Length: 405
Image (cartoon, rainbow, N blue to C red):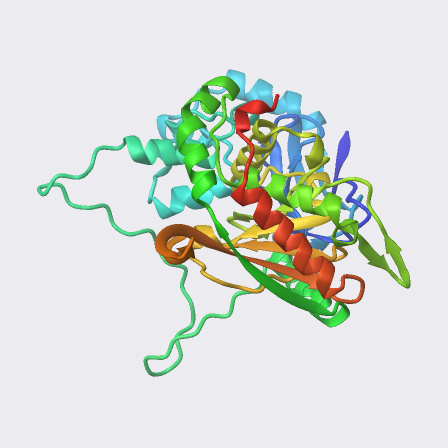
């Protein structure tokens, strides 16, 4: 019996997807729920499990093909499963054949890329114990394995560098390489151009004295982690400050729909996160109802799953306001671009010791620049400036993170 392998139903906002790489070849045996292929949308990378046990009879769509939801991309012959298993049980494979038949453990795409960068061989990869779903090897598993390897001694030659993909080199010493954009990068580019061409974007700036937050964090971080099981970072303070300002100035939490303004009675905050595929913005739903511990848990979870490519489409859809932190990369000042259909975004920058005036004296304080980009079509300068001032005040006079449940 032939079973069709179909592209899963995509969300309404996703029209097409790209087949990244088949993990099985035509004629190979597959188990039910074994990952057959990775499928990239403009939001996430999906794993497509085998719908049945059998032999992969035919691959209809090859790597790199563009597909839509419900499209048939392969077939599995379930009738060949019994014959294959019987033959395997009765035949006595030669040592070399048995070795070749041993399949490598399933790996997440980010883990596979890291393994290539670390020059790990198939035998070494097979020794890594996967902590992901169904025993899949995650990027963290590979990273921990690499860290646990002993450093080479002077007498031990260093391993050769990973192989470099060949590329055409023109005459002379000015090489070029043409690489197609990933579907995510194409979508990001489209949305950024859309944002700048459809919104009247303006940016206002302010600075924040981070001393109070840094003192609070230093005082409570150990107790916070012990009590809540998560580290106390800085992003939860910024999320709390943003929500406080959005409550005072609802227009900054609104969006434009044609000639209408939609005021959102909820606070879904997007947090820009870097991933191997590029920048993604998962959403903290109802951030106003979460404690700092709850916010920190979600941010930590988003960061980990973004690296593993495990964020879902639902987690990357929606949002009423976004926060991006260029400071983690050393940025001192920038003008962030609004994530449509939102109307504002907060940019955070690096905290640096700078001389400031306090009570007529010059003192050194840890200062951070904030940038609020907003859609001037519906947000006037007054509301934009005052909402950023409200965020500044909430950050300079923070509440103890242990007072919340």
